[in-house]
Image 1 (cartoon, rainbow, N blue to C red):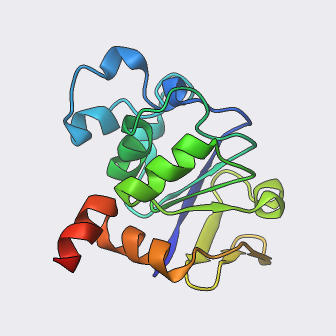
Image 2 (spheres, rainbow, N blue to C red):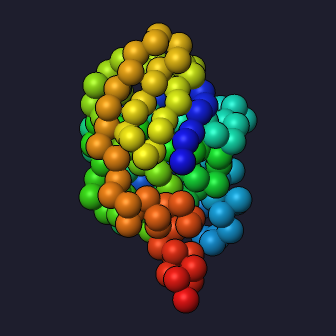
Amino acid sequence: MNAKGSVFKYPDNVDTDVIIPARHLNTQDAKELASHCMEDIDKDFVKKVKDGDIMVGGWNFGCGSSREHAPLCIKTAGISVVIAKSFARIFYRNSINIGLPIMECPEAVDAINAGDTVSVDFDTGVITDETNGKVFHAEPFPPFIQEIISAGGLMKSIKNKK
């Protein structure tokens, strides 16, 4: 599985209330949630994001409350992968559960700029910034987690095994 897209970059400690503000949690509709993704930190995100784009964040990305709405709205907005220096543990697990690929690679985050074109090979963990030519290596997920993400999330993976 691979991804390639333009980068949206965010700082350290982007919490779930910034990703999807609590005032919008009165819906379970993923498209409605995605229409408010990142609006408190990046007003133009939903206007600019295209399917396949890549989100890059600093340390502790996805901290805050444990809602699955946060990775779900990122995925539904069109983001193909989130690369961060580190993830809050519950965001990390929720991302896998809903099928949003995530990778930890501090060196890549330091070198990648907003607007760069980046490609990711999920099987090998290779992250290539095609704008500056730099290549980085993240730890790829073990096969059973790659299977969950490829299926579109934990529930879809379980249904596929029946």
